[in-house]
Length: 392
Image (cartoon, rainbow, N blue to C red; front, top):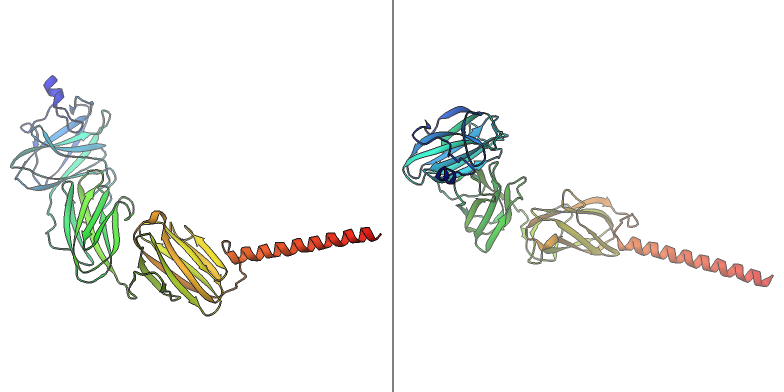
């Protein structure tokens, strides 16, 4: 019993039973149904139950496992007494076209056989009181063909281990978005190459990763990995965003009303522009950032305005009535973060320079002036009343 208990694992601790010899045979491509009941073999360490299947694999053969059904279950693969891979939880699924789809309660696992031999696939209940039917689907994994990715391309692949690398060949400079999407694991991206070393976790939404940056022509390496150590299917895609007016990389660049300026933060996490107005206008400024919290700070004739989250999400937005003159528009990022952004300027028509802008210095100055004038009037009235009393 001591030896048996020592062999127990949290996942697939098969101290109570199935060996490769007694387990049901399973061939890659098969789909089998089963059920975990109170009579299923017990895992002595935690009281959960299991059912085992035997697979004969060649060295290097890659296999996908998908556990579905009402069972709250887990998966584990053993080579003798050694655990090769395991997985629990998640909402991963694959449709008939090889695309990822949501499948609540599904557990997915991908592994590569380290050598020729027989492997034990264990379907485990998640706890001592978890029972129910399940369906176990197996499939052959066809890994990415290894060809370099380019602009507007994608690869559907399986994460087999700690990380996987992909080549990106850039022939045309521009803004590139690299996205790693998975419903099986918490995605993590790293991009290295020509003066670039960037990483990201959740900028792709949910648990997906995305890096958006300006890339010069050259060869780059994309590393896909998982934060939580899980494996499974993912989609890696690259997209090139045209920059018809070029990417702004220096401070003091003039803005043109109605046009969008695409730019990158400097090493301090900021970038400044100049807006020259020949007549009074009402202008809306939007700093749309990718992967960071943007800020806006606008100064000029009688104006000192700033904003953090006035736009959508964490994007900054300001709507100001401006006089004719020269204005400095500074876009920043909280925490001096790096990244690309778009600065939109929208002409809302002739401006009313006396319109209410809560964070404008000129309004504050006018209010102060009005208050001073009111005080002066009150003082004069008091002096007059005092003089009348003395005359009487």
